[in-house]
Amino acid sequence: MTNQENNEKVNMEKTLYERLGGEPAVNAAVDIFYRKVLNDYRINRFFDNVDMEKQAAKQKAF
Image (cartoon, rainbow, N blue to C red; front, side, top):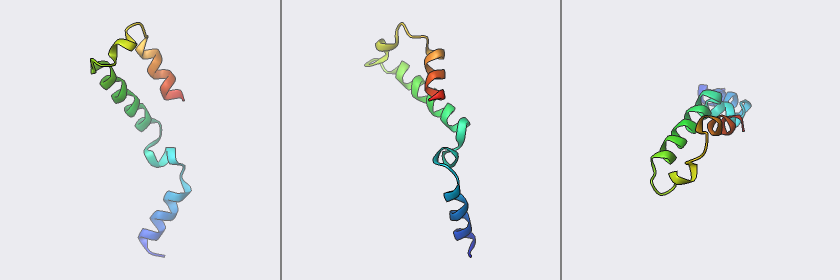
């Protein structure tokens, strides 16, 4: 078995969540998403009365 085949086999044994980077990657993606949402004048008004820390925590837990 070549190195590439071995790496592919190891990768296939991991879940998608693990292959994407697990909790640190998901947390970073959620943080970036909400930062962009809040900076977008077209949609940020929908979050005026939202506790964004709580909202992000819910999204990360999902």
